[in-house]
Image (tube, rainbow, N blue to C red; front, side):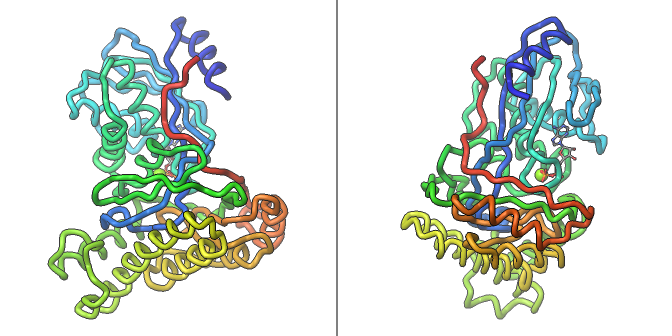
Length: 373
Ligand code: ADP
Ligand code: MG
């Protein structure tokens, strides 16, 4: 669906014209499980996005419809409480805006997204950022891009209860066409790095579902925080390799992943400057190995899929992307050979559904904004 069709559907359903806001999903080229340690990551926004059509409704509630969920739900403005429901992402954005002093009005919203849900390309941040922009927009609040990203981040961590770092929301907000972002997650500053046209990003879903709120992700985060605390530093990013021997073996491995991954992000930024796809791909392969061996956040299926992808002609490198223990594998492919590489990978990977793995190609795209209709 495009923004005009969504506007027309909104008009037909509510008898008023909405404003439409768009926020993209993201891939993370390299820099996994570094964001909450204040480290470096290299995400880019993709050309798959969540659209939020919104207009005031003169009531004291949000009426929220999701096309994907085929459901409409009402959330009263006065008392937002997490319900373990998809609409928490919307209520959370409204609550975070209220916390930031924005008077959120009663509103009707229709949400539509072509970011695959739960696949590791951050449909949740796309939703959170789109709704943050939409509610701020119709409230008449003037906020900077950084405020938008911070509010959407706060919504997902504070309200939805997913302990994610700032990576996804900042990528969705600050994405720029044809560029990756080199994101410093301590200062929250993002620099653009040009992405060569000769290479394309290939995302293949492993079919193993990850859930950021459950199990491994919070445990890994707790390990990183414990490692930092025992080294007497605020953020693990500030540790030095020479000090890691002071940690017990498991925390040593976790910390080694974070520090080596930070170094790989900076090396990858350098490789982009030189348009050196081969070096970039080798760094992605090393990032996967580190996530597998030191961080222990992969699973047999993504290990197999990443190995298949990395050994496929036309692919420079591949790694499991996202919170971990499943999700999708990101490969860096030669643009001319990307389709053929995808077909070769699908032929060799047995997806748990028995059908070929879902996949798509993408390139760095622009960040969140109101759609001018
Ligand atoms: P990811 O961000 O990798 O896609 P998450 O588990 O973090 O995976 O977020 C997926 C969740 O976000 C969905 O289960 C749903 O609750 C919510 N969500 C994302 N997009 C939509 C949408 N278009 N409509 C309703 N809920 C959505
Ligand atoms: Mg998410």
